Length: 246
Length: 79
Image (cartoon, rainbow over all chains, first blue to last red; front, side, top):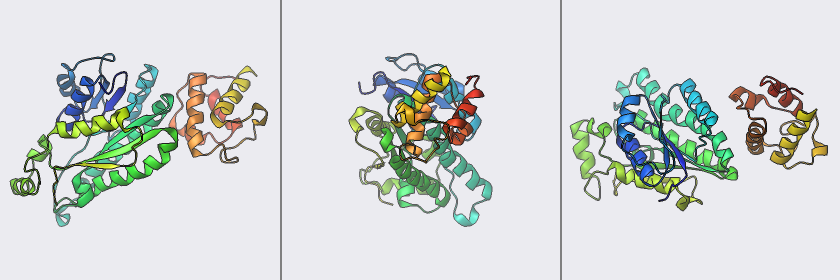
């Protein structure tokens, strides 16, 4: 068990990659702070997880609402649940060529993917200091590292996460707080299933391993970054893409 | 007076300073020991020692020892 006695907060934990991270972390001994917009969905997804380091906790937390984020961290502080790790997983994907992009789409994607990564990260620093260290794990994307047709806004939001990760890692390294990002490729989730079928087929053909990634493939890398196996790893963007070429 | 000494101790531990060098004039970034990194350690130390949770604005505004006492007064800590 790699996360025994560690408390890990995961955003967007009701489905897909977030749900799988909750599961794998719990199986490895972590106490899970599961957050998201729909409490019922989160409760459903974590109800059967094993508890080795105390009961898991569920919070309604929309990462686009700073007040909700602050309230959750205040409550965690008051209840002495000082987190050791945060996984900024919550994100959305909407595709359109730039000519067809409306301002509200830009606002929606950047508010969720970028603002929704920065604000929870900022609030996690104080509890990390109390634990004399911590791990921030951000979810970027292969689209953020390589770009893709029809994904200028989504791609630039995921690129912003890379810039944020690299700068914050330098800022927090002296405090023993590590900051890394995962850049998944084409992962089998509700989000990718909603893609245009033409893109779906094209993307599948571009994967060297000739299969879609699973949420578990991503969760395993998150487990490595959350655990003491990666104590000297910070500022890294780790691709989980099966050799995908874009 | 007791809390002033307690706060000086927080500063001493967080910034690695001698207690005698801590006074109302001590200001953020006026000495190398109090930079943006150690400021976060100081905030954590104060929160632990005084059992408070400081607001973001207070963290940003905490620019001297004197102002720190003013800010903590808002949290019902008397100096």
